[in-house]
Image (cartoon, rainbow, N blue to C red):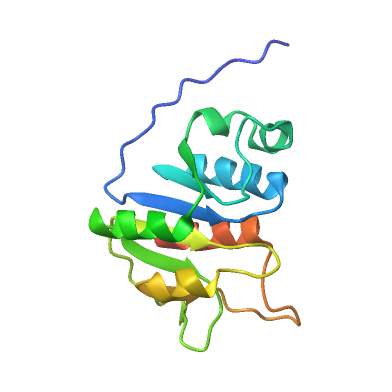
Length: 162
């Protein structure tokens, strides 16, 4: 049986959201972020530092074409990117558990917004936390302190785009 290709119209969203992936180690996590970003209509993904890019096969294996549907750009310095986006009117929000972070369910986003997700082991760097306008977290119920970065990204961005 032949598979019918569905035509999809990409809707422009008044909730402009960019994602800053800072020093993500796993191409599979980045590929998953591309898939989720496409599903939620996220405008752009910034791949910073050591974060892999769509020209690497491991990422493509997971992204399944979403890497062609979502705008992306690789930049070396995430903190310089944050400064640039602030000048363009973006609100900078980091996804990290800190003593002053706010539950993502209680956070009232203002757009345009750039969400920072950090390294799988060390999280969002102090340099970026200091430059963030707000820090949000996802409450944990188990013994672990955090979700996988691509899972946390999906949960947080879904909540932000509601």
